[in-house]
Length: 479
Image (cartoon, rainbow, N blue to C red; front, side, top):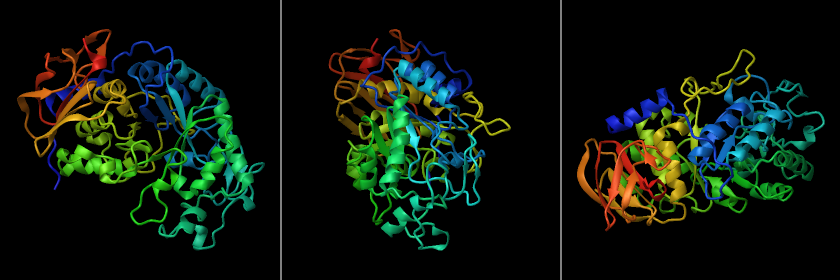
């Protein structure tokens, strides 16, 4: 049975205040920094909105990368998954034109934010009768004029309609069709060259990396061959969903780049909902997850947030903010923060006009903008300030109150009990001084908008932590 949840007054006020009264952000940083590694997924945002967000929020808050949704021409309609049904490699979609995409990349770079593209390269569309794509390209299921014809696709012949049925059969997983999506023959050098040409086109526009959709459905060697055709180096993260006992495993893909660790969000949700935070002491590799240097982690993403009950999402509010705070404080893997739009049905697409063109983002009005929530946005600075520091001074009460430091650079304590922890002292290992509690306040211009924590000459501080709340300090927010 799940424990009941009550937002602490302070945390609730912090979230509500931001939801209703978002703060005006300071000017963007002038140049990118290699020390900023947090990714934010602005799911289905259009290009002008991404550009504006890089300037107003992502750069100033210290996000290192923005992951944008697939930019290539796709089938017409509004459902979110139609963006994952390409009909050509033209950079024109419901999110904007090629010129708007180029402008977005330039603007984000000027704000110190690098751009990762969600690249759909395993398949083309799943529309049996074909039609006309978003930018006017004609297509049918195995015929994409000037790009691919029937010989460029797998026709596995195993099942009615060629769909994958048995995930315990490697051949089916990598040669049959994922929900009728025409499966590209990625072992073909012609196909590899076409895919690489698309990725190189994006690189020519300044893109810094790729999230490779449906990587599990392509042999790791095929992805490696496509990478070998790229015009320059780029960050790569691969979508490979772990399945116990399945023949295709995420570990096969670590030689190509990072790999999504899907177990992370599910395990974290289970711990926060119904187990004990004390169990998180060795979270990550100690739980059988991927090696930390290869793992891309997230509390939720666009797929998992639509799987009922499997992960925490924006609808969980306070507990979701705490889980993200833990992810950004804990050094395992490379973290991605999710930024959603509101949905009530699984297929619902982003807010759009009558012609399904995605509307400009208005946070907290159809768009959830979790990456702006004060707890999450301020913990990005914590992550940047503690980069490279190990975990030390772990404490837990055997249940749902934990604390740990990041070796002289930061300290966090999370109290997920149903009652406050008052009058306790914590050994932070930080230099003496006054620090902004970034869970409840924003540090800017040498001042803190919230509570200040005083660390004494021996590295100790005292704090009261309300139920289902936290305190976090770091050397980048020292007054």
